Amino acid sequence: MARVSIEYKDHIAHVTLTRGDKMNALDSEMVKAIIAAGQEVATSDARAVVLSGEGKSFCAGLDLMSFAQMGQVDPNEWLMKRSHHDANEMQEVAMVWRRLPVPVIAAIQGVAYGGGLQLALGADIRIAAADARLSVMELKWGIVPDMGGMALLPRLLRSDVLRRLTYTAEVVPAEQALDWGLVTELADDPLARAVELASQIANQSPAAIRAAKRLIEQAEAEDRRAVLLAESTAQVALIGKPEQMEVIAAQMGGRKPVFK
Image (cartoon, rainbow, N blue to C red; front, side):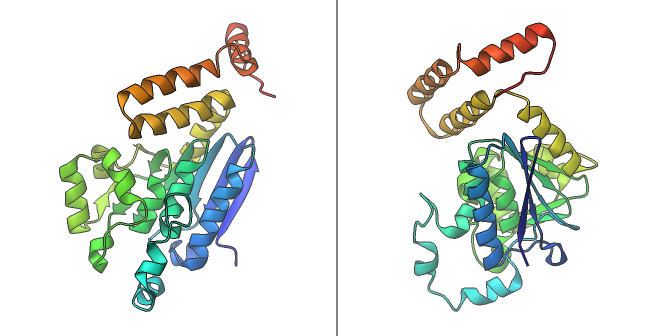
């Protein structure tokens, strides 16, 4: 049975985890399917992505069988190999969405625990249901977050909050997660709200949106001199080009832009 489905509609890629009967828990097949989905979307003409999980929960993290298998494999062989750019296969579950050239919006209902939370961290924006629960849960199992969490969490959380969540593995309600910056906003229907935002993004200049995502990634990782130069470089590639001219014409004409 397929672990992930992809549907393209109105320039939006709808990527859905389809293991709802298991709370979309991550097994080896799910890991590979998530990465493959990200790689497929990267080659599409999608302008935004909605990442969600079917059923009651977004993703409950690694399934129990995966934990059981940990003691049967050589961790050096499994984890130290950089098989996907700067990441191993498990890290790419989250990082493939950061590598995507277009914005990704995660819709979180039920739980996002451990690897499931780290998957959501790979998105640009996280919309959570008011009764959703989140957890950096790895310490519960005697391990540390290693699916991109430590590359992404420090950008969102104060150091003391990050340490508390990591050390305790406590489950956090969505309202607290919002206050701490772990999620972007709450919604009665996170999937509908994610689609609404994705539609808004998909109506922007595709070239400008892609440039903005690249620029934000640089701004979060590089020094001021490099970021200032990157701003100028990105802008030079946009100003006066057909897409920008269409945006201006549409604004002046009080209509939606049409991008070819």
